Image (tube, rainbow, N blue to C red; front, side):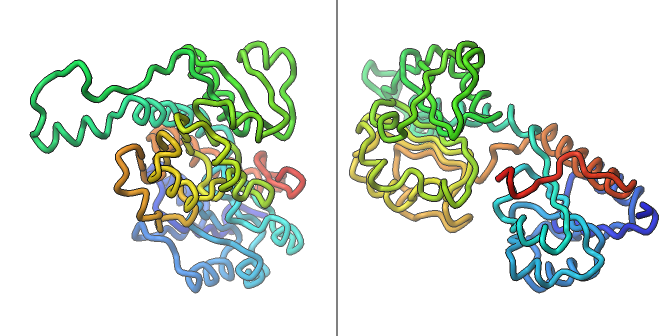
Length: 328
């Protein structure tokens, strides 16, 4: 397929250099405002394009993919997560799916540690006092948090991001534990100083911090359900920079409110922007608006991967970051 004839539709505003390069290489239709497309707009885009460039805000389920036109041959996702795309249905329709793995690893791991520090050191409470102008001075017992060194960190999902979190936590003197579908090679475990737990129940019951770093799949939905959250120590903290669906948000909110958990740092939510209102007013909870990968460098690198995937496809080859159902 010639790149000169390739029609590309982008569903959201992307960094200006990425948009400019897309327009140079392909017949590109850009999004004029930074709002998610409606399902009607998405359907129209999928009927007119050779390549669709969606983001996590675009739900491409079986019904939506079923409306795709005969021209659509590639969904080049801007982002690593592809739980919003029915990859199996796309494959049945002869539509390839690609993503942008790896580029958000370091940024998301940084944010995981930022949330962990913010919760354990009570930073939002301190900021609120300063912004309100009510601080009366230093006191020996004011805003006492907890030291990270020596605490047990349980990483749920030891992929690229989980391992990046482990390396950072090592530098803070934390003890690294993890649960994963597959155990790491012995030399990798040794380099991370990581202890593997085959039983998630046994791990969560013994950790001081749980960091969620696994993708959302049918098998990980509510992996931290009410029963598992109840196993955690009341002094424990939960941090989630992966996908909100992995945690039963209502159960988490109830336990935090009842002080059955010490705190939580959340960057993602079970129902997207519809955040459980119980979480908003708790002093032991830090909420961020899905900022884990939000760096200029990360977004540009994501765009470069999208461009490479489309250009490789346009040249008649398999996109380097093609996703197939067996990978999920």
